[in-house]
Length: 179
Image (cartoon, rainbow, N blue to C red; front, side, top):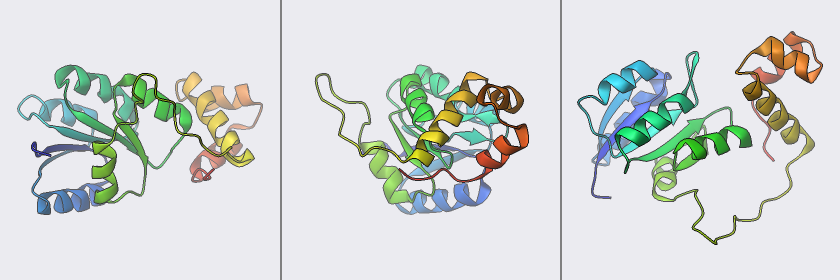
């Protein structure tokens, strides 16, 4: 890696500070943004080579900044990082221009490795086989897709899924199950 400029867009101050310290020790210049407006403002004067974008930034979606970064910096390597992992959001992030997707908690080594590898398969290359997900994981994925279809509206999603709004909110507060 010859380029050494990182942009970290995340509202978790502790995570940002730890990642910044670790990347700085490895020789990277790091700029932090706690929301999407700060990220856009930072990009007016700073040209990052790498970006780590959290999926949920306060009340905003990190997915919204990916096209902006891709258009402004065509060669940037972007990683979507989230504690709310789902296949639907991973696919959306890649379609919008992210290079890879990683679930929190993730350390610096995992972040750098994910930025170096591309999650986009080469033409003619098959995707790696995966194990069938559990029923709980499939339920989580279905809820996430319904939530996306309803633009994040909890009440509309609950109606679509045929469950009480509070039940859906409790399910969403739990960490997603691993496959």
